[in-house]
Length: 249
Picture 1 (spheres, rainbow, N blue to C red):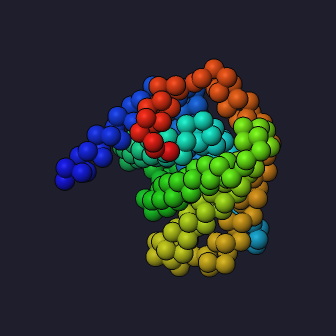
Picture 2 (cartoon, rainbow, N blue to C red):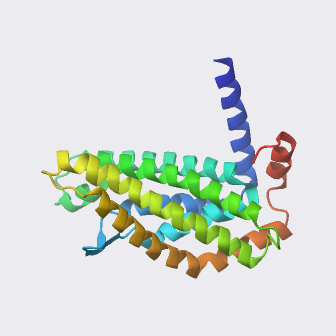
């Protein structure tokens, strides 16, 4: 019990310092992108036998770019903490949306509003689990690829390699875990037998990851400029010095 209290105290201290050190704009964009992904996923943009894309693809690149930026400058531990924060805020937002959806109103027909914002509990569960699992893997892969690059590790090519590799694998796992939980696990029970096979989940996860990687490639130069500026301006010195003193990634 004492070890747990000690760990929680240390995590609270680290997170507090991180939130004071990391630029608020990036944290805000990341949290908003996570919330928007959850909402945009309600609309399917493309559905073919070999690929299915929902509206989340329009903004998922921003979530992964923010993770890449934070991981590059502050380390994977910092990015993981921000991911947990974003997931908690998303769950709170979903709870507020659900409350608004279930409150009856005679002012107008809000069935469309209620259907979108009321949500489905197992979709929220699947998206949360998939996001957190893929985020941790994405952040660690980004960090490890960066460590493996010896020549000009802070250069544009190094940033691109660590971003592309981690994003592709992270996005694939995000799509695959979500599909398996929702369409293999819960859909057959709650959606009158509708389901996907594991092969369909894999195929759609792969094609979706390719599509999302293309978005990442298009916007990653923005991320590189941001981390370069952060390094030049010594952004987050308090957190970086704290972590260096504690020898924690």
